Amino acid sequence: MNPDKVIVGLYGAHNMWYVSRRCYNGVNTDFYTLTYDDNPDPPCESVKYMILDKGTPTKYLTNNRDQYEYDTAVTLLSEMIAPRKANIIRTFNSIANDIEIISHTHVKIGHEIRPLSTLNIDQRKRIWSILYPKVFDITKPDDIMSIKGGDYIFAISSCITPLITNGGIMPHEERLQSTIEQVKSIRRVCPDAKIFLLESSPLNFDDIERLYDHIDYIFLFDKNIINEKLASINKSQGESYVIHSLLQQLPPYKLFIKFSGRYKLLNRFKLEDLPLDKPTFRITPKEITWSHKGVCESILYSIPYTCHERLMNLLKDIYIKGPYIDIEHCLYKCFCANDNLSEINAVDELYVIGNCSGHPGLYNRV
Image (cartoon, rainbow, N blue to C red; front, side, top):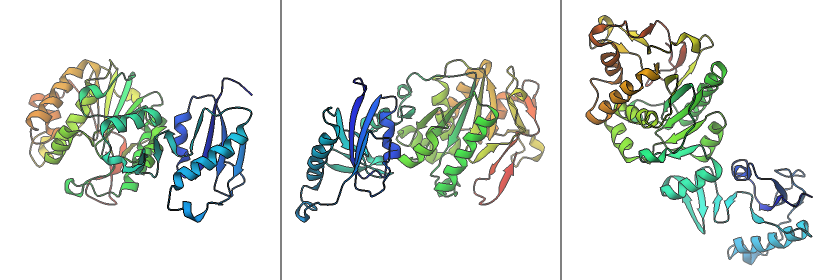
């Protein structure tokens, strides 16, 4: 036995072990496990594993059950671990001595069961720091601490739990799966890109767990009062705010690529087709728009770092003052002033495909 290993005794039900195991990532650990299940295989690699018979006196089922189970587990695990001593004895689903993951949506802090969505920011930050260190609640600019950038940045503006009032009608599970496919499509064609999910709706543990290993950073804005207010007023303002929040913290990059949720890259998408000296947009000319003004498609566009400040100023102007019609018209007015397309890389197709907002079952190739 390695004397430097942390010795952890785990007991009880392990329904959320696949999530809470992350708190032991990177820790040199020996697990000793005690479960209620009759599965002959332990839920994790264990030095010793034992199935706990029910054997709980009826009087403990409604009175001090947690304490009885803990005392019983400590006694049995101590015998299993002897002559070594346990550093930690917890339930499988506990990530700290006072925090247990009860379900995808609820946690137990101390003796109180609470929805994840109602926890205060400090409580949530503590959970993210233990389980998901690349997840951040963004309530103000300095919530984004040191982040590692890269040459190519993909920022996905997302609302996985959409509001019917703003046209988002895809069911949650369908939207989540489409986001996973979206991120995988980026990894497939741009394996070295840094991917940021800018999420405006609440996510639960299951959502984050399924996304986490595919994405570099997840920024949660559902606790952000400014974003909540802006998004309820105007979709363009909310989107501009979350993108600006990321841009102001990013170190220098070669290319920033904004990508809307509900879409994924086609195999024909090539990063090398996006120049590093000009923004790339798909243009809808004013002759065929409803407004009779030019539009830059916002499903996907790329901005080189030379235009960083220009984009920052535009987005700030939109979320503070409101958009000139919408964000697509604003992009055109900023980067194609007086219908001059000479300073952009105008493309006929973006090589993306996805669901049209407000049109269930309708796919849009752009």
